[in-house]
Length: 288
Image 1 (tube, rainbow, N blue to C red):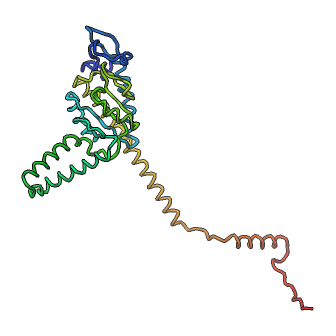
Image 2: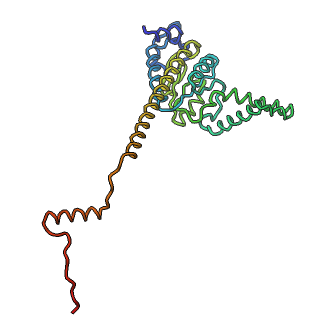
Image 3: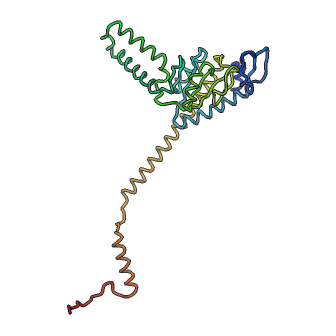
């Protein structure tokens, strides 16, 4: 057994929900039933995880970002820590309706957060009354709590990673409306049709969630490395092109001749080869 498969099994990612609380659409990902509890096929989990890693790596190398969503208590710590390391946007508090479909309004709220923070840092907030200062402080904390994770998301993400499709159905519906691919960790009570790349597994185990997020963030790091290599290669090509252009500019250029002068030169050469003068003198003709 590989190290990744061993880690997943030890984390309990193969433990699903009770048989009475399952979604029939998850039947292809269920291995068996023990003590009225479904057991998830770990091979399907690894298959979905590897497929998601390849997709994320390719997406990040193309210059796009991935947004991680996990508002349940078991997923908050892992998402905040792992996404902060790789610099990806995340949502661990309540998903605000319109975060994707009304992205312009979300950006306006983030600008409001920057204004409030500048008031706090400069000390200008003390010029207001105590009541107004308390209101502004509460507003800042609320915006910071809900939107701090997506502060660096200046454009719509290239993909959405969600933990527990039943809890993050609003985020998945918004991504679907905008055509954004979704990657989801789905338990046996979830609907795999909400995910473009399903990763069947226990979405209540903190350790299992941490392993999945860790592997996906590792793919993000690999994609960023490929992006940096591609940028460096293109930079070298641009510098070589500039050197070649400079050399061509400094090199002496042959004197260009007009098409009319070239035609005259060819005509004189043909006349010389034929033994006839290039120009004949004619006697003036007197008027009758």
